[in-house]
Length: 276
Image (cartoon, rainbow, N blue to C red):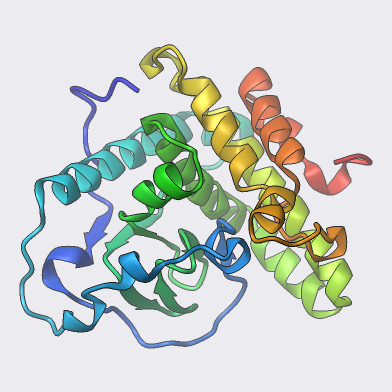
């Protein structure tokens, strides 16, 4: 992905340098995660090393951590540019971008604690996306989804959850889940996540001028590597569809491709789709 000269977003809260752990736990609303750590059985010990040293004292970041933070801020900047144009054109309302919280090891949000085990997530209670930048290494080295555009897709996916929150979709799904059985609640969450994948594809189409050869396949591969069926097999389990919360590898990559091919948010209506 060609990011040289691309502006960095100002909507970044970097807790890595300050060692801040953030606000207290509130458990408010629906927490939407990328579905990696909890379901994949990943060894997150390397991600948590040093977490206990965060006492508020200033921390020094390595060159790799600095680069990861700059990359995340630039990708977030592309989402702001894309959605500030696409959202008003297709929805008819102004786009209000989220804040991205960068952290290392552990942090807290109004939706609960976060660590390398949760994977990236979006908290609607404070309208912030949370990202441990070490996750980029996990994505590449442990899940086999390398490449900068794979990492960019992860950020775009969490921003897509913010768009769902802006549209009122997260609140509706949260309410419906509370009135449903576990299997029904999981099925609703699958539709939510696949819609976010599709909206990520809409973003990818709009940044096509920044793509390099192989970038699109990196994103599709990442979508496949975080499918519920793949992650359950990776954890040594037989896939159990009734427990799926994010969709299969095939579904995730197909809905991303759908958004990329059409560029229309209306084509991402997974809730009225008869077949996922």
